[in-house]
Image 1 (cartoon, one colour):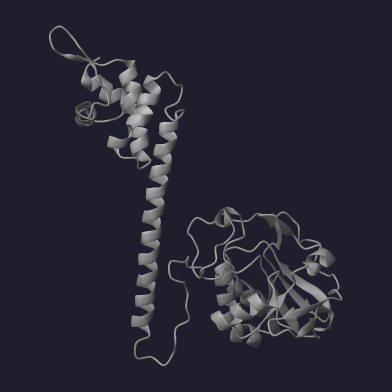
Image 2 (image 1 turned 135 degrees about the vertical axis):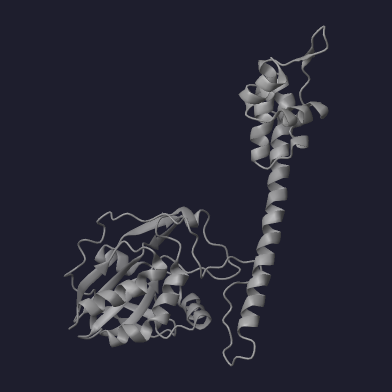
Length: 318
């Protein structure tokens, strides 16, 4: 076949084919009249080059994959040299990501410094150097589905369970008083410089605990004015961790610690496992006069949840 037909079948330009040939990646046969004659093997090689290039592997470094095919292997990455090329590309990409992340963190620090220059307000650290920004959410977070795992909760009595707040004080959940208490329950909050569990962003309802807490912080006074007597955050993280979160995010309310997930076991709250650790699924309880009055579940997006609770309180005044 001629070069134009090869380019059409492989979905590349004729210029690209000539470039691959100049590198010696494809070697078409020559006819008696001197014209190049490309075969089906050349189509396969050019397609492989195009696919690898789309993955970020430079054309000049696709040779190990092509040689693997030429050796009769079914797949271009069936050979050790191909795997080594994968590893090299991954390592280079990791270095680029780390460099970009560090640059992003520096830009955020510069932005915060510039925005607060001359102000008496000291900005809280939203990211550690090179760390992920836990205060914002990725645009493609998966939405949790309602699996009815919390439908049994409204009307239940508040359990006779005692939990510690961030200061180590005991809080009895069955003795919260007649006013409404909002308890937003979440899996875990990320801490700058400490990685979240692998695949965290892909777990529906997992990511977003820090933005959720910031939302309750920013709407705290509104929630009180709308009828909430207390607001608590609750996770299975220990009191030291919760104390750090209260300080770092400047939270005006208590964070409760339930490392044994006693509340989940007592009320039958939904949980999930990641990396062998059992965690709360995100939900919010409104407890009034020793009884679960209302439940929010599932919750999405978490950064808007405090506003959702506020809207419900205003729509259901006492």
